[in-house]
Image (cartoon, rainbow, N blue to C red):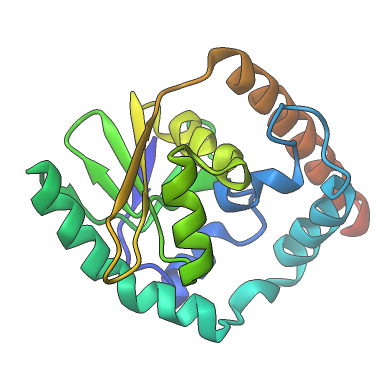
Length: 201
């Protein structure tokens, strides 16, 4: 793994991930069970467009996203105090081979990664009642483990005034095998498409 040292959501961060499949979008490549996603082709074309044109279309930040960004630092501090650990912020992590990457919300010691979500109240309550990693984030959390080769990912759901939910996820070997194979296939096709559009140059 190679770390790109920069603050997230800065121009340097967008440049580091442009045209690469990233863990936050791995759900567009595989489902939570590791099967091919129906969104794969559209995401493939999106990555190709970004790589060739240099234009990244995902720079829009909604009000909900902005709220999450603003609360993330607070959530990271609360998590660090509750678990009595140091959390290092990181910009972008590139997997070996640098064909895909991830942007964890923190690195925990030598073995862990942190993924923080600051959902709306109704979702936060639902997550607390279920007490497990939401299905929607399986690909992202497992993907971060694939990229970083670390031993656990702590998923955090934070909503001020509610208890913090912390769910520890460890590598799912069977799922990661499917995810890695899908990523290799995805990236091979991405390289081929980009070469074809650029005329093989």
